[in-house]
Length: 130
Image 1 (cartoon, one colour):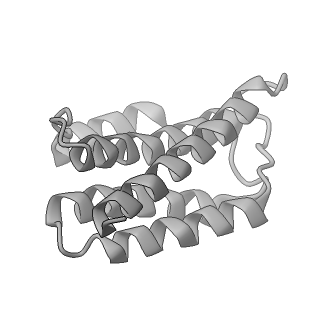
Image 2 (cartoon, rainbow, N blue to C red):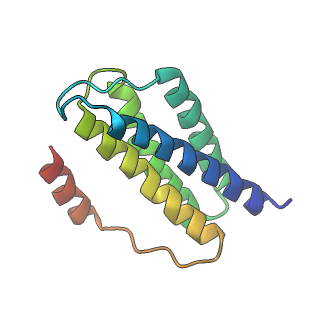
Image 3 (tube, rainbow, N blue to C red):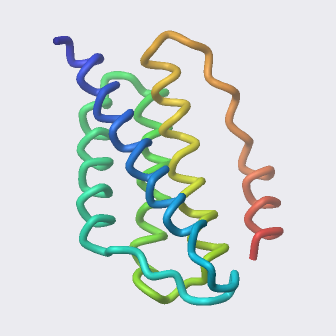
């Protein structure tokens, strides 16, 4: 199995895992401002695997950059977890982790990933979430 194929499988595993976390958080019946309680051990494990994938992708700058974005958002989530952020913001972070993972998978499969928003678009989005 090639390094690219192995990286693709790891990214698929991570995307599915973060999707499952998002579905669990979304299924919680409490309000949007209620603290979100993720399993921090699982989140730590997934984040370290995500960081390893980013290191493995150093030979492909566009893939490494997408994975870097996912690692960044995972770090933000880890800094506030467990219980220090509301359900809505937790969902936002999980979606922000999944999107670059999906783009990475598309690139590794040879599909054209949708273009990422520029810094100003991301800033506007962040300000509107807050």
